[in-house]
Image 1 (cartoon, rainbow, N blue to C red):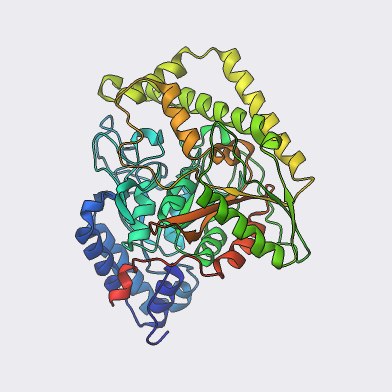
Image 2: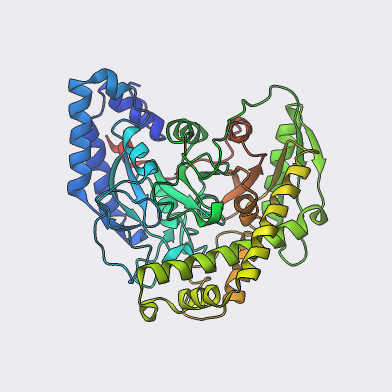
Length: 474
């Protein structure tokens, strides 16, 4: 790629593979960007020694075992893990909480091992809210993560640090997790591509500590659809439980029926400019020959509400169980975290069982919807990214907190509870230059169908990343 500036992780890997850039040079540039942009609050733990060692090992492999190196999808590309999920050996995940010491993990999760096998070079952890309980990444222990496009606004949560780091150009892609929109909401806030893969597509073992009853998935946030597709190929499949392997169906070449949802109800109204972006995406796909089928809010309202309640119940019980298993001193936790754990402690088994049954019905309803349409096109966020401080955690009003999250991203938990793949990408910018995100959902196993549509919409060029990635300075 002589003379071409890299725009995504695929470009960076090609530069390294061709010898135009070394992995150690790429790492130095990312480390310099991390230092220069430290006030963004995207990174909560940085290990330059680890990063340089991983990059040197990549350069050594390229020199001594070029065939093996070339087979790695992202050979030598710097990246960051999230301070939640994993674990990644050598990175002291603390889940944004003072309840955990920054002790380095001694083993990789299956997904972490795949990150390394794909050639990624890790050098730190990105900011997450305490235990991932918020759609903003502002843990009490710090740092407060800010949106690179407007630092007075949130970068989203719970993968806000990951999204901010990628959007700002510190890295070209980063590890992220999604249990209730935590990949897609930050990606939408920061103008990135965020895919929550089909349930069962991504490995969650061997401990399944971030499994959350099947609603959680780990993956990445990226700057391009092709990076997302390449990462899905490199990281997914053969998850070894607890669900059967997902068969990724090739995207159909025929005309699709696309369900268009531009109404999110009177309780969670979506701003006009966000709806205009969704309508514009529908028009682009209709021009391509796809059939647009308009959906009503009443088609999904009950299912959306049920998915939000299931998410809340599972998160609360899971948190209480974690507290019990690890004998954590909850007096040290944020007040909201304490309240969520208390709610989980007080939940009767019968209530949890009813919630799990409700989750089955949510999934069944989505399958019934996909008998009528091939995918659903909708808003991702109801408004522009909110101001920093919009999701405070210094109170015990759980209902208010979850209501605030539902108002900001009303459709987010639906994909987690039903298990369907969901993808967000920017499709234009608003008057303030902030991204206008849309969301696509499809049946389980149709991740490639979403990516195919996303490639088409991305090609319109309605969104341009204003911040170059660190390797552009090479």
